[in-house]
Length: 276
Ligand code: DHB
Ligand code: FE
Image (cartoon, rainbow, N blue to C red; front, side, top):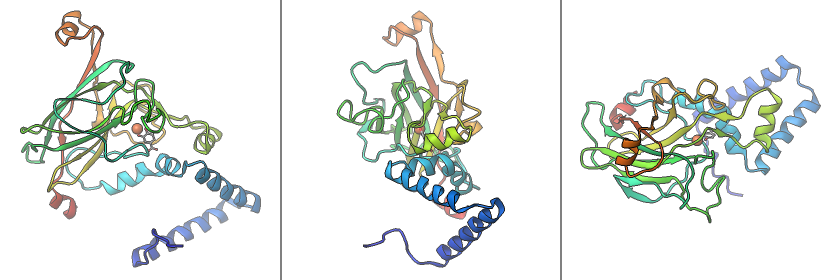
């Protein structure tokens, strides 16, 4: 078997030595017995067999990796990618409407803003790779069958010549990470709820700049202070303003209340990233 993930290096040796030392100390500190040890291994096997190893790792650990890896970074705050990103989504040009079903549920949402360099220069043609849950808390491909709607509410939108973007989508609902598998079981058994506050994911890129992976969170969401993944950062909480005025609704050509949110994204230069 060709092992692709193990490449000998001094860094790997140092990390592995330290991880083992800490795990062995954990066993001593907690007086772990054979039954508990076998049960922990069986849990990992069950998690891998159910296809949830990425989910479990991202839920428990990715936010901490993000905190460490973004230290000293300038520009917009980062957040975790999570397990539901898909590469190669459709390429659209701003102003864009995300791919959706004929009867896409929920309130329409108009996102807009500008992608900029730290000195304020607009980044013409920046690529805004966006993905989100739908109004029922489901991600396409993972929770909504692709046959129904390939790349539903996912796209790579290029900003215009002034770095501005306008994306029409639908307000996402708060999201429960899958509850019925090993990840849900361990959370439940240890008194943790499975909710993430409503959020929209972004990966924003431009040549010569460091790619920004982040999320915008809907202000006022009931789970905003207790995200199971721990990925909320204050500057990423945004007012997704609800518009109910009939005249405003009509002016947009709509017949129901809608939402708007504005956010300017700032990408660090690739150089700044290296220096950090
Ligand atoms: C995780 C991230 C998400 O954005 C999400 O919707 C679910 C889970 C995660 O990091 O595990
Ligand atoms: Fe998510």
